[in-house]
Length: 212
Image (cartoon, rainbow, N blue to C red; front, side, top):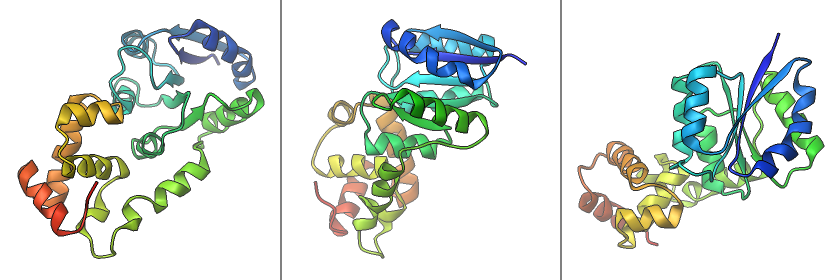
């Protein structure tokens, strides 16, 4: 049976460098390439890949949530993020979105092959040291009774920037997100915290000792 892999990165050199490490995944392997996120969306809609490996910083990609949204078009596809840098919040968000893995580009070739073999077998592969750090911060550093402990690390990051007085556009720039994504996170925060607007959220945050 043919296994279809979507390999998406805006640098052809990176794609070419990864191809030899994909070969062990299946005897009959077909690779589809994409150089920007619109091409990724088109390939996923048309081809329904078995596995998609997607660069986190490619042109046209707003945030990691956009990668997670691809599952709507191909529910059985295994999604793996490829990243040149390992940001704790991105790793945690990928895990929260139910993605299959997060691969730093610094991994050795054999390690990439092993990680993808695990993913194809139904396992998940995330940098364990980063997930352990994420489990400890920043939410767990809050008092046990703090209502803000229910927030994800990304949501808490946004709240802290909000308390510091940053508008949505500045928060988006600082965290490498789009304004739309920041607004979506804030809607989730409002719901979790039982508030209706930014002012109420900031007051509540200050009352519970949150500061940036």
